[in-house]
Amino acid sequence: MPSRLLFNRGIKAVAAARLFLNPETSHLKDPFTLPDMEIAVNTLLEACRAGESIGICGDFDVDGLSGTAVVVQTIRSLGGTPLPFIPHREQEGHGVSLTAVHAFREAGARLMVTVDTGTSDVDVIAAAKVMGIATIITDHHIAGPGSIGLPPAVAIVNPHRVTPEQPLSGSGVAFKLAQAACTIAGIPVPADALALAALGTIADSAPLRDDNRIIVRFGLEQLGKTKHPGLRALLDHSRAPAANGRPDTELVSFYLGPRLNSAGRLGDAGPSLRLLISEDLGEAEALASSLDALNSERQRLGEMAWQQAEVQMKSIDRLSGVIVVKCESVQPGLLGPLAGKLCELHRRPAIAMTMTGGAMRASARSVPGFDIHAAIASQSALLERFGGHARAAGFTVRPENVGAVLAGIERHAAWASMNADHAPEIEADCETRLEELGVSMWDFVEAMSPFGEGNPAPLLISRSVQPVSVKTMGSTGKHLRLTIEDNGRAIDAVGFGLGGTTLGIGRVDIAYRLRTNLWAGRLRRELDLKAIRPSA
Image (cartoon, rainbow, N blue to C red; front, side, top):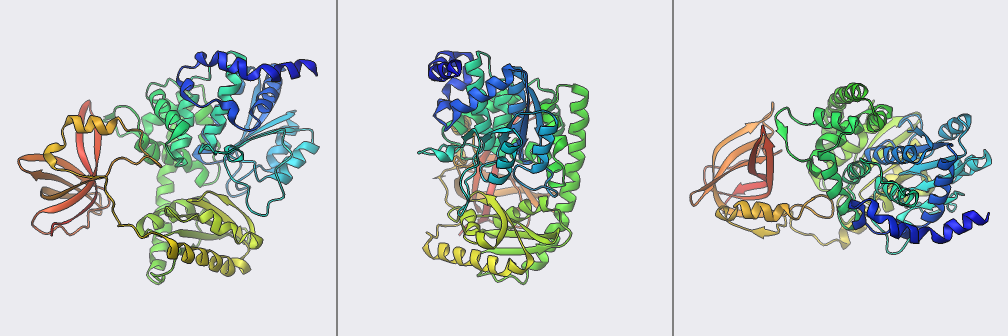
């Protein structure tokens, strides 16, 4: 096929010449530095130019959903017909399923693109090839130890296959594919693709450096002025009625992300994907309202699971390297947040488990310095399936093997604890006085944003300050609101989760981050307390 060979030969030069089409993305690294990108773009463009239907199989978390939406928008822009498929968490679990492959074949698709998944799905992608479906894998996961090689895909676009690795999220890799394909086609990247990629990058806790930082910075700007019906409705339902201002990583992490995740955590993530690809205002509003209700239900069920965990924590050895709780009648999608809450509260790796379909399903979360995925992978011979990252992973195991698997993970945690540097519980970036916290300080800190994994907001300490107007917030008094004074300077502060702290009657030391709210059109600057204690 001489025409295809000629196209391949000139692809990078054409890409370089057309980067001006998308000025925001010109800051990003060349997408063709990712492995197999040229083959992936060639294959995708040929299918789109022929007007073919193209299957898209994405994961059911925010990263997979937003990346799938990016690929859907891109295929539409290129003239193809996208056929998105998101697996059901409980019925199919993570990864490319045969159900998706059969659905694509029945729809006449001859090409499948995976998003945030696929690297470990050797057998399923081999089956797709036998059925006449070629596969482009876009993923950022690592194939586990003992894997039988890479899948027989026409292209595997995964940043872990190059050195040095690029710490992209799944939606980030999908955006790179969109950037490369649209550049070669001579069209702009779809209008909201960067905002969607930012959602996935933040929600997946990808380190905010290199391309991730650029995606999040410009993506949040794009999100703030979006006209995308789904994103607009999601923003309207996620913000408090009087809140406004530009979106930040906190809004995505604590408000947008949980709503998008709620449907998948309770089973079917289809409504979340439909919201992200909707072009109809009425449909988007109805879907956003439905996700809001599902998020409330997720919170209620999550609280019930937490109550089960709290009972078990009373009998768990406080010297164990890993916290393990086993819950009854808990949806597998709620295990990850439960493990995360245990990990954050007790500063130890945590595993939450439940029995479903005759097997034990588990989600794990870890602390910096302990690779929970590697610990789980060391028990791969006893597992039915597993996957994830250093800080978040999951596995499925037969009941008779649970004890041996947990013992192996515990051994890894014990070795890691012996070799770890035991840093102070709170390590601040700077000690300062309240009178130094002027507008210039806020502006200086804001210039370092966006903040998140790999680029946390500066943590400051002020000593011997006076708390006044102290009160608790929330139905159970869980949170703290007060004013802090020192040398004539007073500033409001809020401490989430600090409502039960004993302050005494004198001065206190505080560790905090600077927090800015735009509420009812008014800019409010306050301290976001992370710790507070009576001064020595």
